[in-house]
Length: 154
Image 1 (cartoon, rainbow, N blue to C red):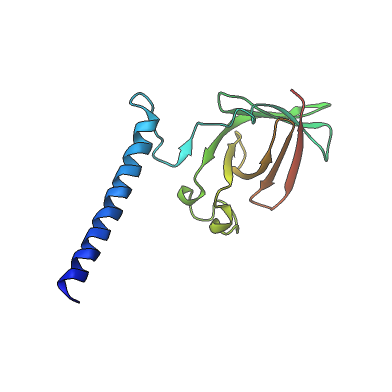
Image 2: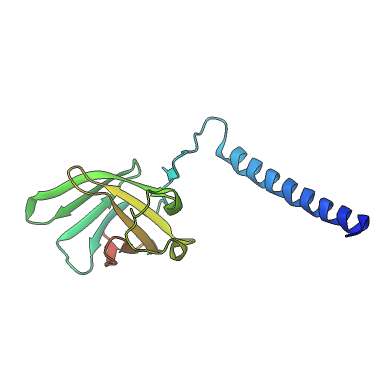
């Protein structure tokens, strides 16, 4: 390799490094000095469309309520003992423990919002948000592959 080619390669590497450094610096600045960026890959940022009460289209007695404070409540009409409140957060599937998402290939989750839902005395559940509008929500329970369809109640 001649010296001219070597210099071109060095300049390209420096430009790529500067671009990487600049883009990472911008995302850290966007978080703001008073905001903390979770190190574990969890994010408290929730799409405002998600908050509210959603009724299952498969079972009209089942509702799931997502609150802006990160709590989630599952309820079943006519069975008060089935009502349970837990927490939910968006997560980076690549940063979750190995096997936590079941047999789902991680590359299939690229660009998908993944919710981690935790209820007391229950296993942690992961859901992929397939679609979300003002009136409908479609999620896939990643542990089993079940597709859950909801319409917004309020």
